[in-house]
Length: 113
Length: 113
Image (cartoon, rainbow over all chains, first blue to last red; front, side, top):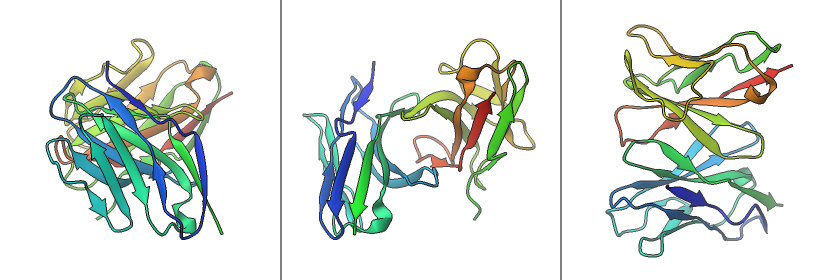
């Protein structure tokens, strides 16, 4: 069975600091996709970043970047220059060959002013 | 381009009643996915539909739950004879075709009294 594990239930950092959220996964498939979504207090699920497993280059989107370690099955999210608006639940997700998204339990990130 | 639309946003039902949740995908998207989120948990896949076809319903409970995506109109998730354990947030996502990124609607929060 494929699984996604987020080992940090909650994290808190000061505004403008850099924070890294951890995610590990398990899959027997060779081709898959990884995602980070954020869920702010509005509860809307918003895409942060996407990584194709066949790509060695780590994905980046402005202040958000990932550290994708395929052999270790690790997919961490780094947020640089954190802002108050980054406060949210962050979910790591794996898309399998059935095109289902398999989700971690989430990390609650609080950015303090 | 309007995003994924879901209605109603909040739905209250008494035990034994029926709940109908609607999802209109983004323009140009013909693939729809339903997920359920219990309080303090990540999302769980329920069903994947393409126009007029159920592609994968492996995450859907065998009884009381059904889904459709007709040729015209929104996708419908139907829960018959609701029980308290059905209380959750139900999210719909759409994509042009897999493995494209899934974009989420705002969710429907179902409360069963």
